Length: 294
Length: 252
Image (cartoon, rainbow over all chains, first blue to last red; front, top):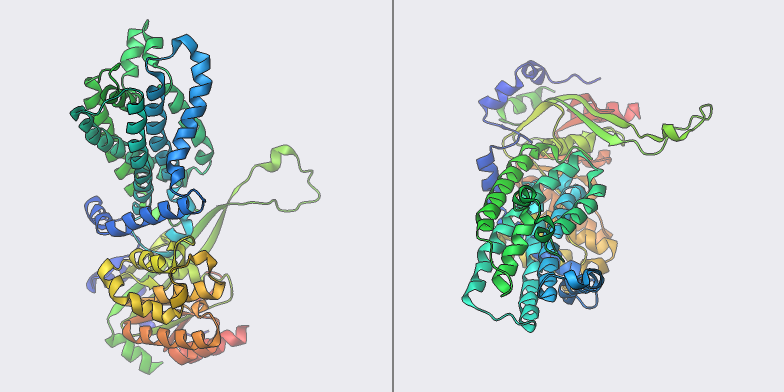
């Protein structure tokens, strides 16, 4: 057997020292949160291009292409509208069609973000194992891609609600802060699930149930507050449901029959900031582990 | 060995591998066949298996060294290289490096439904180039692939040789200080193989330190002044290429 060169044997006792002497960095070490976020920012062009190209390629595979971005939520609104419109009959909320459309369209953005976030690391494992870049790029690109899909449906939503009597006014500008907060919230959720599924693979099987739970509790096709009316304490707790807050604000802005619950604004803002910060820290804490567990 | 050691001592350490262990955890799929034991429903539970891929590897690589990495299949060469880049974190021990060693490879970042041209941009960005750099080199990359007429077609329509050429051209567009070359990269027909060998040589000359992973002892002998032999996760030998390769060939 060939001798291991003497010098490296000598150094093997104090290699960290040797590394420090020649100012070498430890590979795969998790950078501090601040410099990590700077790295993520430096990769913004990659993040955005990835989101745009993925959206393009996903939609171009079908003959109708980008049209599917609009068709998908319309079709699901149609199904829910038919089913629950008949079941609820007299108990339908006022101005049912736009009520439902707003609910379905907004929920779509949340669901795709949660699902996409959950898959963003585990379904890109070959990419994670072959190229170095801050892994947070992947869940961010996913949510960005969903936002890009969401924006045209938003325009469609405006058109459809106008067909049911809504008239544009300056109040509609409130959609800008609403979408912003909603986006931050979804990003936080995506980051949390991106890491969770790495540790607990089976969670990805469980996610459809979580999204169904959120779908039925957030009041897409009925107003849960009318159900909860006899229970004031429950109602107070329910007022913290983040998706219900988003839907209520959106309906308040667009539809004359509904008013914007102003306390929902700060509750939603609190949700968005807390979930985003928790998501960022939680995701970053496992940065060096994303390549290993597979 | 004297000459190399002397040279090595003058060169600055650029990569230090300090007692690196790597464990992989996988859910073991498929049951081991045990005919004597009745297989009941209760035994279906899948256990976590731990694979000890690297068992304490240490070495110091210095500036301007060309280091060959050899070993039989599954000996841990690729794991070691991924650990050097920081892609696979060591479970014990550490790797220190002057700058991040780069693996020559970009395939996983590309999207088959996109055109070759869009993939050049995406792949370049994924490797950490900025847009101007990519645009500057775009024509050169296209020229090198020899796919000018197909560059606007989706990559999924390419033959495997064509997409391999595209991947190679993108991967080699970037400047590297510490470079890891997996020889399996040289692909395509004979013309392209020659072209890519030349390209790898150029990159190797430009890069400060090169690790070459190869099963071809000829190319190891041609290009490496030092060779490391990994076997079953252990560092079997580290030294003069001639000595290590001779020993490896006897072992095989």
